[in-house]
Amino acid sequence: MNPFADTFAWLASPANWGGSGGIAVRLLEHLQYSALVLAIAAAIAMPLGLYIGHTGRGRVAAVAVAGALRALPTLGLLVLFALLAGSGLMPPVWALVILTVPPLLAGSYAGISSVDPAVVDGARAMGMTELQILFRVELPNGLPVLAGGVRTAVLQVIATVSVVAYLPLGGLGRYLFDGLVLQDFPRMLGGSLLIAALAIAVDLILAAGQRMILSPGLSTDSRGGRRPAEDLAAAAPAGPDLQGGTP
Image (cartoon, rainbow, N blue to C red; front, side, top):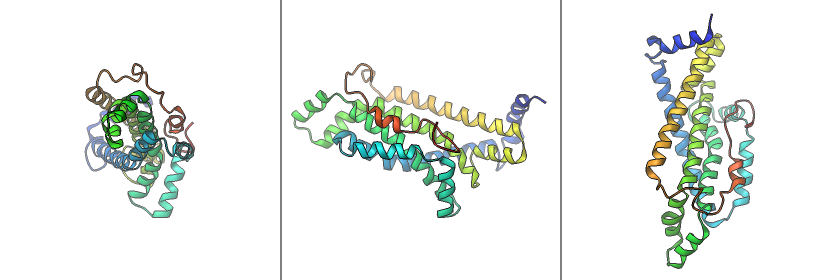
């Protein structure tokens, strides 16, 4: 039998879209898990990244921590949190938060530090306070780089949150683990295609939103400001890896 034809037949079947375990419900669960992880990680990483980018303090420590977090195995960290905190939603959420902090930290720090120093000095010479400089000058001018870090983190979370089904919980990752146990390869391939399609759709939405909120004059190639902090950006995970660190 053709596994690809079977996969598309599985995706097209109305029976697989309805019910408590249907694709629509799993898709909603996947988005809810992703949103929760991103909200917690942003609350931790964004203020820290803005502070480091504005003051330059803690830069070395941030690079070291981001690099260390990058080496953590996703599935191993998930199991460790489940063993320490028991079953439920929050143990895998906290495990994924740890892996989501580096790209958000890198994006926020790199965005602020990429602003032209002359612009910052001019704002300071005009008598603006440090908070005014951060939120009225550095943050608006650093949004293109910062938005790129957010998009990277969102894509990583959507792909990696599939592992919560290992505990087990819901989400689109349920099709991967159930299909593996049942040797149902069309289900596994279908789940993978759904996750990839969801990631692409969300990225397109974020790209459209980024074009709407950013001024056309804010281009990282035309501002002539400082180059982003490539050392910290490189320390952020490039993608999910279920068995070990990011390749």
